[in-house]
Length: 405
Image: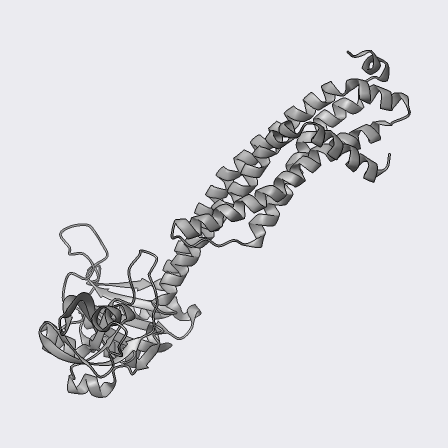
């Protein structure tokens, strides 16, 4: 029997029982669609986390005051005043493989322009902060060392602050009030969007570190030190050297616990990527269960089909159809179900993924790998679960089959 003829007969048999064929494909459609949708959600989560961490800067180390240990009566990270500007200078001057170092302080303040006001985060930083955090100035300029040394009241604002205080007008050159003190806006940062935890990265006012310490907050310490390492492979080495240097400067000896915490954003990104990959695989595995259920449905329907077409099988065998001919005939029918179900499932999965992105305000990422994998898996399911019914049909005795009523 020609392969083309077998395919034609398979389609004829499926269209003869349209509702039954659709219901049989439903398990495959839902399975393939669920796999694609779930993987796209998992990939979207991973991309969002990676983008969020990358927006903080590449090859980043962040030093915060306070021990990372939760035991005893120790304060949480960032709760004490051990880090100084001099610590940042020592790190910059004494440790190799570092591109930039920027100590920083921050606090929440009300920002006023005329009759408009807005609560925002005010960060005191050095000029190196721009390179570390990969910031881009849309209009105006960033703070300079002259601003740092002169403790100038100048500010660079994010697009959210600019929109709420100035509307559509250009803020550069205009004055705002921070904690009732005037600051001149010298630049606007291009939008960076939201972080993975939903924080608006454009809702920020950046001023010189010395201005923030002495004129705004009245402090002599810093709340964090941002470090950009030259290359990724030097991250662990630089982190270890920073820890040793700070222990020496803070006179921490023996088994005494550090009064600071060094966080490695590259390691954090790697850990988060591994975690989201596991979540994605879990979601895909759960969705793939419906593919197996769909395969069982194919076997069930093919068994019914064999029973219904017993006399037809007997006639074909009496006319010379071989074991191979009958096997191929029924395998093609089960594979056709898998192929059609897989194609519809791909369309269904992509539509569900796009609907999640549109109505759920959540980023999804559709990639080729889960589409091809789920499609070939659906075809394989059709083949695997069609073998037993096909073999049963091929082994029928033609005389008994012809007698079947």
